[in-house]
Amino acid sequence: MVAVHERSVSVWKDQIKPKVQIAGSGPPVVFLHGAYGLDWDPFLDGLAEHFTVYAPEHPGTTAGDPDGIKALDNLWDLVLYYDELFEQLGLQNPTLIGHSFGGMVGAEIAACYPQRVGKLVLLSPVGLWRDDSPVKNWMILPMEEVVQAAFSDPSSPLAQQLLHVPEDERAAQDAQIRLTWALACTGKFIWPIPDKGLKKRIHRIVSPTLIVWGNDDKLVPPVYAQEFGSRITGSQIAMIEQAGHLPQLEQLGRVSGLVRDFIQS
Image (cartoon, rainbow, N blue to C red; front, top):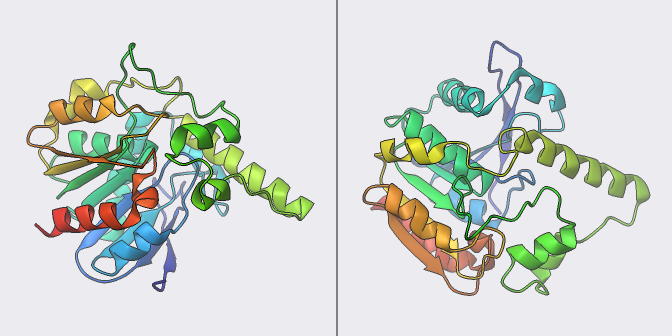
């Protein structure tokens, strides 16, 4: 595992003080996490072997600044916030990687600020809607159902990690509170499940874009890969066998290689 250090910054007239995990060296890559919060995982470890990885926590989801979410009212505020955060970090046009909710935010940033993003990688993003293939409402599903929908193999050790409950009662309560609050903070910008208008803006994305989707994703169906791909000019689509909503973890080697090659090309 690479050495990860944490940096605190002050954004939005000092009303939000997010923590950013940083590791590696090389060209900058920003990773925007999904709705369940930020975990530094083997996918980020692999990226940090080739790039300087910045992994900010979405406003409010950090244990040190749970009230940071109160300063932002809507999705447009969140996009402006990330523009400010990039300035604070000295990032001009980094590669931007977003997973799920983070993918939606990444696409919005790239659409609203086309020159802000060098390259864009979308890992199973939300943000578009089809009546014939609805996205599951992960915010109200029991974790057991989330695991069944999100993983190609729900019985795998990786999937079962999400169901693990700490034996210590206080630790279990703290974990549940953190999860619930992370879902509430990200849900503020997505409820009800999108469409939030991305389809009207997505044509503005000019960054070279890679879209990665697991063929077995039952949370956000694979048909959305084509929906995103058809709306982003020149984008590439990579469909991943034996992977669900977290292809970067279920098929770590393949997806890491695809993403690395795309960034370096």
